Image (cartoon, rainbow, N blue to C red; front, side):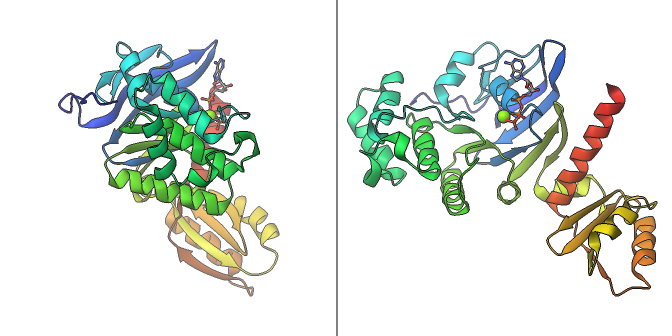
Length: 318
Ligand SMILES: Nc1ncnc2c1ncn2[C@@H]1O[C@H](COP(=O)(O)OP(=O)(O)OP(=O)(O)O)[C@@H](O)[C@H]1O
Ligand SMILES: [Mg+2]
């Protein structure tokens, strides 16, 4: 991929407006608009079946939207899908390389698909860049999850894309391998490569420059972690003490309390009516040994809130 991208067509590497997609009578992507700037790591979150993979496939020209428009790397997602496919690096949700080939053979195979002339050199460079040399001749099927993900990243970057679309790249990978993977993503972003990455992991969401949360095909929040948190206007209290599970059940029925979630040894209690929430927490803890303190609402509190509200909305509308 050495073709220069027309930087004047859009300041965003992804800029899509009001995308819609149905599968049968299911409205899987519902008016999704999303912008990703150059060099940004953009996290895509949402429950299973919420439309993340489908949205990614729409953005990179693998699926045609029923309506809506937009560009990816400056190319039109409907009319110029071939250019997009040639220029983005797409890591699919399921590992999709040959288990009975070695790492080197798999990368060589990908280089052939891209019809690269200097395959040996390209593969050597890629093995070195992602620290894969020591395993180059190991059969892919015998690699651990972390090494497989590393191979998948190397493969989708072989043609030096400026944009990576990574669909749950670290699912099932241990924390150390995930941390290494994210350090690699930040190195790439520092070199001007943009990344759209879907994930279910909260620590990964916190490492993104921007985030979008999707549920039942609808984008419910978008922005930096702080903007996403602020958008829901929740206050949160943390309660420590005994019998938090019973307390949680009681508080949930109390006016002012929109949500209770146990986090380790603490109970997080959140609500959008801050005064009513404070009263509820005060009443529930005043005559007891329970300790309550107001804390900053976290990303996880907000995601749980968004998910439960969208479930309710879905029930109402269906
Ligand atoms: N090719 C298809 N034909 C019919 N339905 C589909 C197709 N692809 C996806 N769907 C449905 O569209 C909805 C959204 O699926 P999608 O894979 O985009 O969700 P997701 O957010 O990526 O989920 P996950 O977190 O499980 O990967 C689901 O209900 C799924 O069953
Ligand atoms: Mg998916």
